[in-house]
Image (cartoon, rainbow, N blue to C red; front, side):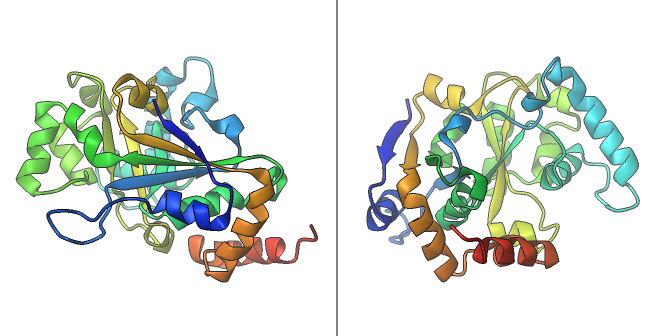
Length: 261
């Protein structure tokens, strides 16, 4: 069960986000936490873009990927790896079984407070211990991590285990994989991004976390605190200009900056 905590102030929010001990092996303040910010508590369930298509969405997955590869071929050189194509598709808005996460609590706060239409709703920042989730990986995937001395999967590492999504779905057990996408552009780099990938297109990460008693926290940002958080993030230069480099991000930041509350 996720621990639910409500931040009553900007300072308490910092304490909740950064409340972890130093790594005993490194004697450094390095964290195994990953973060996901959503602007409304109505989105508490971690439904993927694929799920939100409705109907028999699991059956649509292979068609989405096949057609994305076919039509995007002139714009993207991703090779043959389905995992590269899946990450690229998620990055550009394709409905996939992936969910967006970040290593940065401030990036998560940005996504929790950037939607002006939802500023009157409470927001959520999820915090999950990705290291703890690794206990549930099947042997085939655990061995790849050990061989690479890694904590996260790249597309190439997943390709070693499963060349097709259909093969990935036959791996034993229920589990979550953390996929660090290739640095396709500065957006991924600036957002300090990674994706969660469930062992089945129908599996919900929040339900899996609860079922396996994996450490997770749900930090609530009350609506009355959101504008303070938003303005202080802007002061810290956590804005659309950084999160979405380019004219689109600049325009989104200016629109919000000059918005009359």
